[in-house]
Length: 451
Image (cartoon, rainbow, N blue to C red; front, top):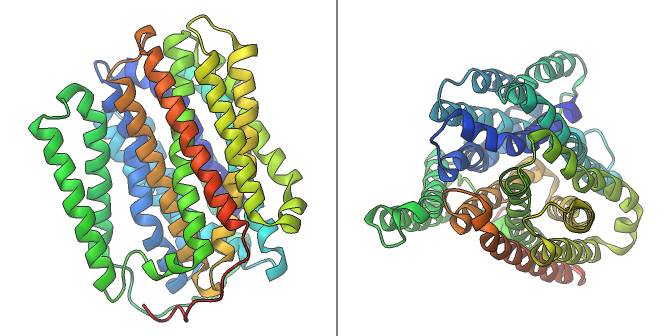
């Protein structure tokens, strides 16, 4: 049932991306910047609450936190389906993200509680592969549902969530709580939410407001001030939102850096392909979804086929190879894409290369980070990894909106190429973290109890 819930939250990512152009039609005259908050409101909230939920799971038990998270996510999905306006939908997505935040770190902790230590890499990469399976199903399912009505992309979560709750209550293990200390700093969660929201807000609104406009500069100032305030508060707080000393673990820090870089690149690739197919090639949501299937379908296949290889050669080589292939796939689009639809020589090769790259790199980065942590920080550490993934997703979407502007049409082709080349550069930067992860681990740092 853990797998079912993880499948549901990952499915939501792909389905909502495919539905975004139809949301623009339904809530006209919403701009691309306005619509981006349907994605970014979710991602920012998820990033801010993942660590809180992970630590709450460590304190009161993974099982109850997980089940409450599934319930909140399911109820919020119904609210999304009934949304009468764009900003009501954004608010419902924020609540939905709160439920997802309770599910994701506790799901991994529940899974790891059932497997021996020597199978952690396999279990973690398998957990990540579930996201790949959801990604494979998401584009086509999203396209089918959008053909009926975009609201159905949220309705589909309701029966899955109800089934997960019922089965979870009957079958989930009850691992003991591991902590008795205070919960993480709620003020820190608020600060990081404001900082990332202000940064992404400035990026998505700058094309219409202007980079020198007082509102844009004001948002950037808020992002800087709250970001610095968050770092200072985190360093001094008795129970910080982010345990910064965990990032001093070399392999954990490297894995998180790679996750951030790859996450921004991935977010640019995903949304740009959806917008390109529907707004430049004028394909339907269903045709777009079908066209995107090869990439995500390869992710679980590559992840499973390389499990033994990961155990034999380590995480670094797979991350390096994945970053190179992903960069090659994005670069192919930048070179070959034209306004005239040409799926076989344009989008298909790119999806094959990027899908293989994601299968090699993404789950491996998660595994590298989690394995570098002590057992009593499994949920908190995995929440931190996923926080970086969500922040990178929000930043990637915002960067794409900044490059493309408020509307997407044939005049945006140059902007797409710029975005793809930037994404390729970020994927290449990910290979640097892979090379670093390939080196032997340095001597252990002082005990994690010290800050």
